[in-house]
Image 1 (tube, helix red, strand yellow):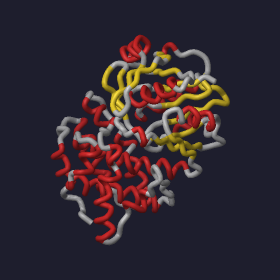
Image 2 (cartoon, rainbow, N blue to C red; image 1 turned 90 degrees about the vertical axis):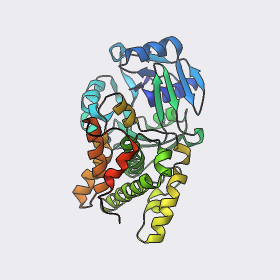
Image 3 (cartoon, rainbow, N blue to C red; image 1 turned 120 degrees about the horizontal axis):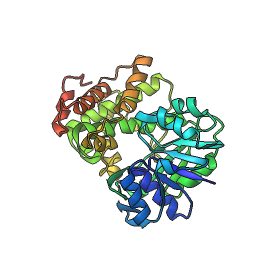
Image 4 (cartoon, rainbow, N blue to C red; image 1 turned 180 degrees about the vertical axis):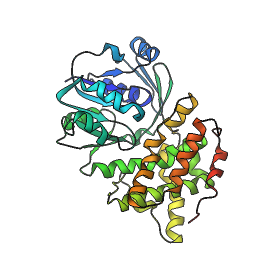
Length: 337
């Protein structure tokens, strides 16, 4: 069986190293020539909450040959139409492309390669690219989980599950959109605010002013899911929609207190979108908080905190705002309920 990770950056390098360390063959593919050269010469060096170096098979896209049974897609969503169209020629007829991305990319991917060949995976851990050949795992090793699902018949679902189990625990979700929404809720809240403030997930959770904004973003995500009849799936055994939904003051206070507890194992994470902005790149905020806004508009649920997050991040991209914690003040005019 031929397998590849396309877009082996921070997270793809970590995942590929784990899979290779388990003795399975997988190609790590990336357009960054210096990164690929370092992987070829020295292997993948993984630091952070774990420490190891692993020999890997690394390729540039121009070096790809033949057909793959499984391709794990770990690029940013902004270029999905172009990239998936390119990968279509390298995917076996009975193969599967598994989107390991944020947001809800699967329906559009299926429009290019077909539902049966489209799998999706929500990843509940994070990593930071430190330089050519080096990635930092920023999540606790006990929190390395995956939520896997299919849109159609699910080509290669079992084989993809086995690959991902080389690194962590894999839950195959019958309600895959609900699992996707769970990750979207977390990303909209903590990736969004990490990008707005330049802070880690832990810092966003601990500071009371940013935690209040986080609580409102989460509440909007939960309200939109309810209106869209999406059943939010548990994350690492926790029913986050039950923990963080509220109506009265007591439940609101409890959910507020639980936020830093929930983020304890992911406290060191910073958003990959923040990493993009620091490199002068545009990020995928429209595919994270923007998706919540799109669904909110469709189902008649106001999403002012998610919308403001999108606006602030675009403002940072345009040079209107610096990346600083004081950006939390830009939410101050929104409703406090």
